[in-house]
Length: 392
Image (tube, rainbow, N blue to C red):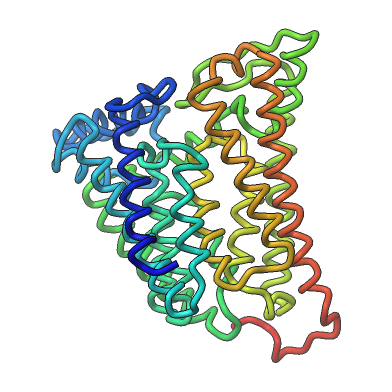
């Protein structure tokens, strides 16, 4: 596709998102699409008066997120300012992908990003996740520059923790330079933010107390049991509906350990040079998918991260890329059905909602397994690696 049709498609799809989110056209349960922005504005209003959410259990963000919330609130209250900033971040991602795709005569990256809100729903611009996704997309597209790559990952990490996983995608021979730029940017940013807001990293302590969200992969067995003969309770805690049942602590620990173990294997492959021939975007996509499916939380907006990385990975598609893309599309599309349409039914153990949720989780896990197998195949190609193949 040429640039003009892509641009017109972006305008039309984003207009639909805005009209749906602001309830100017019909969308089922549309009042929940931008509901979190009201919380962002409430935090921002307090921050503007120097009252930071230090002891708020719902605050689960690194400190740079507060700057985004505050800026959106100062532009315009009542969700307008934040959604405007989210739209700008979305547009920048589209421009970056379109520009790179034009250079490589590959429109697939831009088309994937264009389809993102249609697949996962208008919630895309009503959540914070588009901002760290912008940092991640920029980092991968400019990975040849250690300065841009390392600094962008640091900024993304100060917005939301997950972009730090992109360090695994560091090209061979540039680890030291990337690490320097990452450390410098992160340290300076942290210092400035801490001068503005003491205890700005206190959110890390709250992460330990989080339970098992009803949408997470780890909660799937509980949901199936709740839809069948059992009766599983849930409660609103730490900004999410969590399962309240015996064994959730053990399940949370097990899936967390699985995630850590898999990421550790990626680190080993990376530092020993086994992934020297793997595409950086494929490494990043696999790491983030692992972090999502082994997380205690699997909110629908997390798919924004996946779509951003998937779009970059489409520049040089890995093996079975089409299958991976379809599985991710199916998972995200069902996620749109569950939230906000069937969320109460899911909480109550409705059979149709639980069935949809099961398909959502399994398709995402399936996509993760395929990306893992692709990297494993690359890692096993040269068992007799030499020092010259090592990163850094």
